[in-house]
Amino acid sequence: MINTSSVWQAPEKKTLPDFIICGAMKTGTTSLHAMLNQHPDIFIPEKELHFFDCDNPLQHSDFNIFVNGKWQSQALTVVNRANHWSWYQQQFSSAISSQVLGEDSTTYLASPLAAKRIAMQDKKIKLIIMLRQPSNRAYSNYWHLVRSGRASYSFEDTLLLNPNSVLNRSLYLGQIESYLKYFPKEQLKFVIFEEFIKNKQAALKSLCQFIGVDHNQLSSSVEDLHENKTTYPKYYRLQLLKNRLFPHAGNVNYPQRLTSQNAIALQLNIFRYINGLHRKINPLVTTKPMTMATSTQAFLDDYFKNELDGLDELIERDVSSLWFK
Image (cartoon, rainbow, N blue to C red; front, side):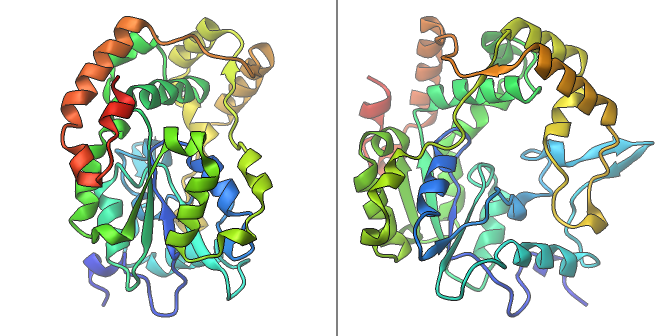
């Protein structure tokens, strides 16, 4: 009988990634994924996998549903262990044997569960941790929630009513400390978003060295890749109104994950229709969002200065002077 604490250990002969990109949401992980995936010796599945914390409702409330008095969720148990690991194996099935394998998830960094479970594997998995100016990351996270139907109020009101939804993933100090409980520092590579944007060539060269592939085989054209270009609803207030009227509609943007045996039966077709109709009336457009209010920027910068005190020493990088001028 499999011990319940061991269900997160990969069965023998199961494929595991060599590295994981686990930067916070809105830190450039999607673009980095696309760039590294152009290297002939690297294979990364197309989508974020979210495997190691799929059952964590703090990170994936949209993976769960409460229907007819019953919960349906993505719990990895002794009974369905083989199916879940088989699903994970399949995500790497298109790779060739000589390639270095990677995966990414924007929830892993903020999830102590993911840190513990990744460390349980019988393989020294390397971790690429992307960090961005925390106030700006929170603001960009807010707009992601607006687009996906999960933010219903202005940024300032969200900070008052549900601050955790936009601030939590910028609390890098505690998150990195969680990983360092399980991983030696040499298995972690820190990438600072602002430095990455300024000099992609240097960042990619350093990352290739960390991963163990030849940077010279990566075309210089990959530096022009920009995946996940940000778009915004044409009518901001209309989007907020729709989000308030149909709060459950935000979850239908996230497809069922992992095995069909334990898949989430999203019986929300009416909300899919509402989302489609709304998007015809209020399309997403490529434009710049409203600038964060100066007072809000100052408020958040003061908060994060205190919360991230000690981060420079922990990651051995001077990010304070870069982020808080």
